[in-house]
Image (cartoon, rainbow over all chains, first blue to last red; front, side, top):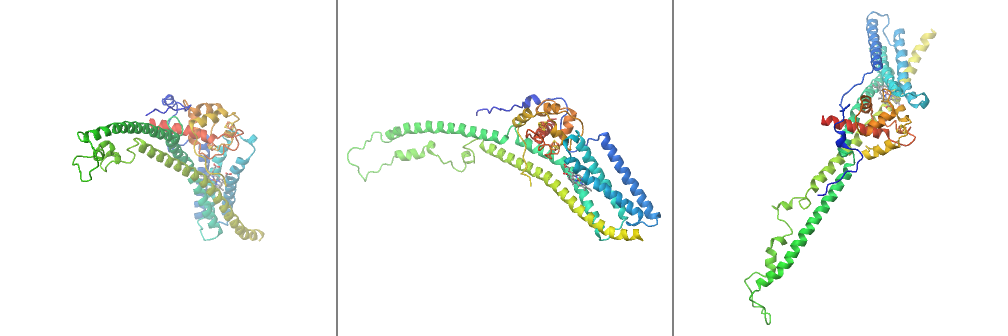
Length: 329
Length: 97
Ligand code: HEM
Ligand code: SF4
Ligand code: SF4
């Protein structure tokens, strides 16, 4: 079979032994000092808030959401959540002149920081009151939103690696389209086998053609049909037709036991190429699926943020109707 | 709603895009995954072939194919596809080791 030459500019063989960073693990974390600082600060706020919340629940005069302490938690938590929602969205849409490389990553870090600590503060603000009222629905919405953010962040790590794995299957070692390469292989197989079959049929056909008169001659040797055709005359010897029927080279339909009856046997190698083609198609379908997961999870997170914002506004309206009259008394 | 997702690109296509890159940095400025200063010429040089330095490998693994780098490109290039090629090279090197 003719060897297919790669026309890729990328030389895989030369690249195989590169020194430097290699590999793509499924789980990895790059904790820069400023990321650690953010995590530390978040933990500090969450733990300090929790300790005070527990202490106040046991020793405080009024451990309820609408007490002064409860309201401080609520205002801080809402401010954090607002910062989480707005800072990152606005930074993304800010004019490019204000941007620096890595700035958006930092904004995303603060987005996660404010989202997580904001949820913790709102949780403490509830002081364990989970009555089926607007505030509880807002809290559930917030919990779902933060969980969706954490899942989204994990998907953002896992999915691209899965995509790389599938894309790797869909590309040749030289980085070219495998479907194209397999199609070329298939075409080469078909051409190669067509030539063989042509060679086979032309040689067997010519031998059959040359053999047939010989058989006719030998079958009829010594006996020439002279004179009129006698209908009563039947020879027990094989006729030229019978001889040619028994001849192996004329058996174009192989019997069931013959290896030729296997699918693809008349085109050796084609079956494997078809299987490879299917594997590539599956890989590309999976790649597409993973890409949609990334895209739709982001949309889901944003929709959840909008729904939760609605629930929080509903709760703020309810809270205002409780708090404002007490302020005027 | 945006168009259907675009799949990976081949090495030849990635090379064409790298050759067309004018190095304006817009894609890197729009990227929410890049966590350290990186110059576009180093990134472009290491994307196609040859050794990959630690900062480029960190960026390649952190890229989450969000596509935010595509609309700002004045030349209409696909930095996400170039990053995917880097990911594939890293992935394959890990499989070999
Ligand atoms: C109160 C809590 C939160 C709110 C209101 C919120 C809201 C949003 C909004 C509006 C966006 C879209 C930004 C844009 O594209 O312009 C977003 C994106 C995102 N959020 Fe949140 N979020 C919250 C919490 C979280 C948490 C806790 C995490 C993770 C731990 C998280 C992870 C993300 C991620 C990964 C993105 C996508 C970033 C991107 O590629 O653009 N979010 N969030
Ligand atoms: S696709 Fe990758 S390189 Fe492009 S903006 Fe998103 S994370 Fe950055
Ligand atoms: S935005 Fe486009 S032209 Fe500019 S550096 Fe990125 S890929 Fe190159």
